[in-house]
Image (spheres, rainbow, N blue to C red):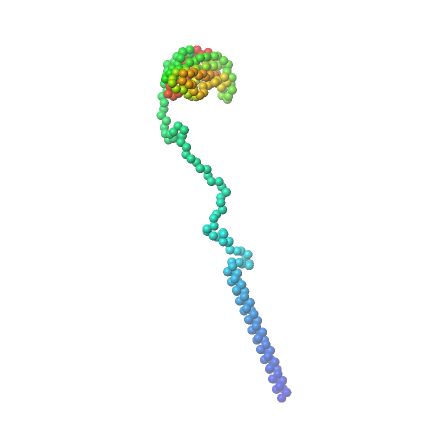
Length: 232
């Protein structure tokens, strides 16, 4: 009888312990499931907000991805605006300028008067033998000639003298060297009924021979006037 009572107690205790162990295992499983669910929810939330705890990266800002956002203004200045300007005398680089045939008058004496036509005349009012002075590169000092040229305007209009050219050659055609020092070339214009003078200095060749030829022109519309005679 006593043994039977003890056996009942042992069975009861063993059953109780088994039941308690089952409850504890079930509780742990529930807690583990709850933890796993919470972690899954947290991961989903993290993905939804575009945040990763492991990389620290974030999505681009709205300003950077918005296609309507204006680009920053360039710091470079705009190119200058150019306006085509016609040539002062008209025409363009594609036009061919016709050649102008220049005529040369028959030579006159150094003391004579040359005729440009249209009432404009020229004369050599002074010829001096001098020693020239070199002032610019290419100039050669030495024996030379100083020539004063006077243009008289007998026309009704002013005559432009800015393009007057004076040239001197010896009998062999050797050119004299124009010099700067002592020269006072024509400038401006001469009014109708007036006269104007210009001075031209030349260094003559060491082999210079007479007679000299002095050629003067002032316009392509007028002939070249030539003086010949002993200039030295």
